[in-house]
Image (tube, rainbow, N blue to C red; front, top):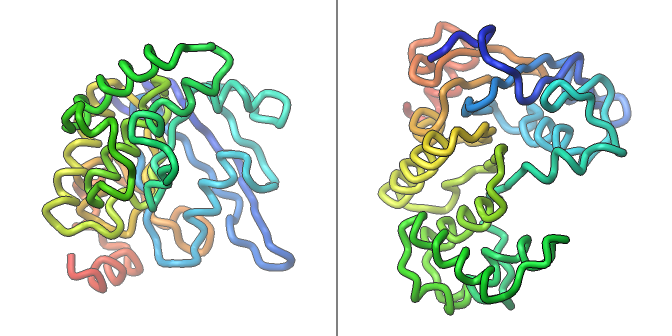
Length: 249
């Protein structure tokens, strides 16, 4: 892997601070994510993983600065960030009343690009194949899909607008080990193939190791440990060792 200092930075936080009343959840956190890097975020519950994600997405107020491609993110210019962004939610978050292809093409159909339904459906079918599903799945409803199929459809939807940034919130939650492994492999293949910058929140070390180049371990609202995902199990960081031990890694 190219040294981080030699790569352009996609996302950077500087002295990021988030508090709820008097409780500090994110404590002047500094993070740089180079372009094309898959960054994992781990840590015990309540340490600020999801809050960090919400801050980057602009879903909650915060102190400090967040930069995207070197530009300070503010309310007035976040549209540029969102235009290049895709998300795979923890529960897939498919629209129950829409077919699979309508779910995948939702952003395309409802964007300012004024894409036709027939063109949007063709794109959806192509994306279905890309995530390992048959095109006949396009006419099904989410309730007719298995958990693994729902994750694949949700990934296809996240990819529909060709994002350069992909965020994943617990991508394998609720799946059996074999299905989880196949989803991890699929995500890893796609983000590497398309050189997508990705941020993955997960309690599952196998997902982090399979998908991520690097990982940060959040402790008391700060980065307690950072390193290559493949080296995480060999860390001497006490809380990280205890955390991984509790998961029987």
